[in-house]
Length: 351
Image (tube, rainbow, N blue to C red; front, side, top):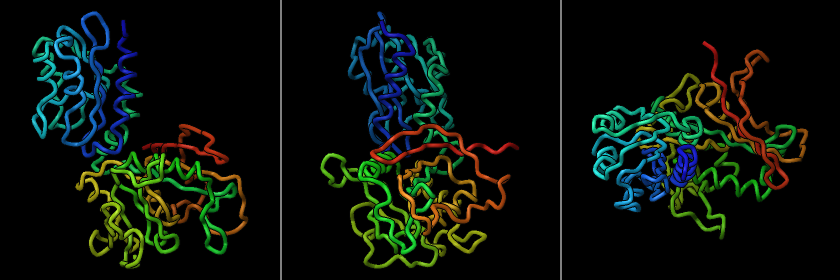
């Protein structure tokens, strides 16, 4: 017999398979248990417009779902969009009990739990809430704030340099660390870099298959923050490998510094269905995002090297004294090849 906690753990793991392909929808996992408590079906939401996790699991279970329990990471939807309401599908399948980790915060889809209860289905919420929210943090944060969840990724030496005094920066970190970055890219909807990075390094900003190095089937948006339209006509970012937006101040609007308004940029990306952004390249751009309070998570790759001079990894974050330091909550530290990767979230400022 499988416990609710065990089934929810499996559902959360299933949901993670949809990272990077479901936006503007959330990632969702579902495990169906028979009346005897055995797993009879499971599924996850794989892509926007495709069947939801509950529908996939119900198709797998068939009649074995009748009289059973559905364990889902997010409240079953209660509306008809590109697919039908999952709450009603569970009712029609004879599910008698539904265990939910996180309530749906969107007005259009919420209400599934109430529909289930009205139909006589027993509903329990909050089981595995913390890990389920963490697994869906980008989407949940985006819909609650109306702008994409932003992860700042950078690579630096032990003394905090992102480039040498002569401007060279390839490669500060090792091949394993660079492969790890492709995993980060594959889980987001857009990669954002500054025009300075485009001019200096001419990156392609694509996702590569880790097995053979080929371009992955699904590519995030590539967004160049280019206030005055300096992106070279020959830049690799202008190829056809992925959808690309060169965002200028004339198009997006200007902030107080006369450059692209970063908050307006994120608002526009949200309107385009982007829920998770990876901020790459450019210490000044990163400083602008941090100064504006627009970074949610930081992933840093630290190489066991020292330069003693050169470009710092962060410029212009608005900090002038130690009391104004941007504080982080450390989530994880790991070795990636010879390098160190740390992951931290921005600590909420006290009101």
